[in-house]
Length: 117
Image 1 (cartoon, rainbow, N blue to C red):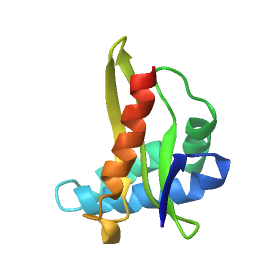
Image 2: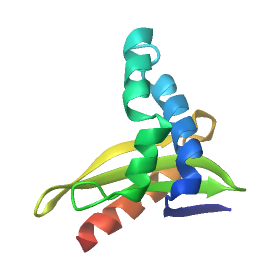
Image 3: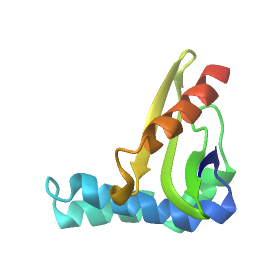
Image 4: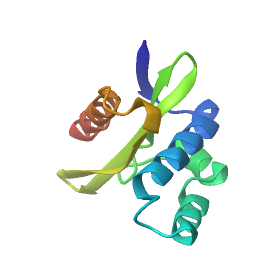
């Protein structure tokens, strides 16, 4: 069973892993290796993700994760870019688990959070 939940400190490594694998799978053929490595270093390092699961506000609502049997298989997050406009900033699913509806469940959680804002 897949559980969608708000991420916390215990999810940092799993978020990093799924985002890195998802980024490579998404952009591996269209972007240079150097570009991908730079983006991964900047955005998906443990220090940054730890901050993003512990410090959130109106502009960044934190990460939501899809967890199955204790393993992170998807991650997503967004925030409000205007008083009534929300944006999905990141969503990645384990490449081996695409097309199972996991992304839809994560998007629903982020959307619900933004509607409440």
